[in-house]
Amino acid sequence: MSKARGWVALAAMVVGFGIFSASPALAQGAAGGTAVSGPAIPGAVGAGIGAGLALIGAGLGVGRIGGSAVESIARQPEAAGSIFTPMIITAAMVEGAALFAIVVCLLKN
Image (cartoon, rainbow, N blue to C red; front, side, top):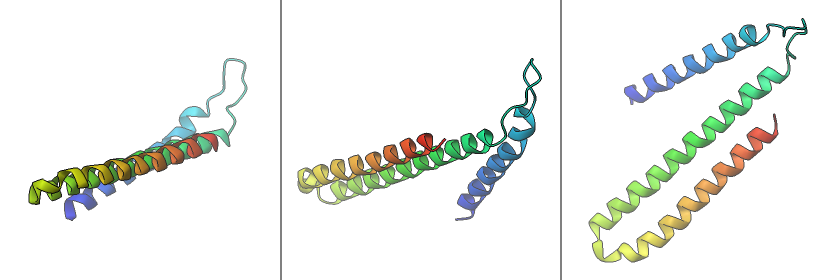
């Protein structure tokens, strides 16, 4: 559990650094002297973070579904046919929810 907390802390630091360093880097004006619009930057960062979290959640969900199915098939090989179909349906539902979340994140921008 401690290793997972370390990864979460590292991810939080990277995201925090990206949020705080993106604003000054992108605030530089164009050649004509006009500044970059401020409210567009946090929206883009938020959409990227939301889409990334949706992908991470989908990956974890499909991984857990697949791992549990393989473990079940290893315990009872004769039930492989009755395990495989619900596994595929559940994985498709998780992927569909993740795709919906990504589309919502990108459309809110």
